[in-house]
Length: 78
Image 1 (cartoon, rainbow, N blue to C red):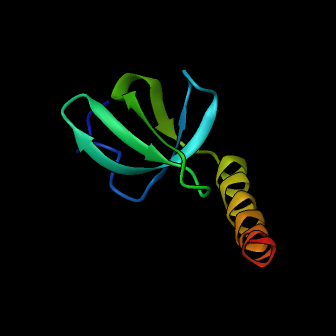
Image 2: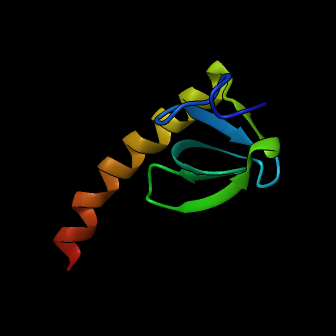
Image 3: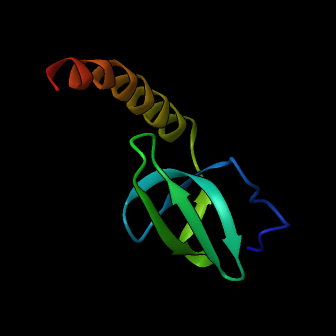
């Protein structure tokens, strides 16, 4: 799979190596930089990622919602 064929910036993908879904942040040759709603970033090879399923996209949306909900609470405690 090549970056131009199916994958694009902002696309939800699943990284088989880490067993986690993420969103494509950038490409660097055969390496893809991924990000989670919490801000966690990591690099994966193009071979290890595939487009996310509907369930995995829903998981990312749920994580983003949870993260938004928890962030204000963390600021109040500070």
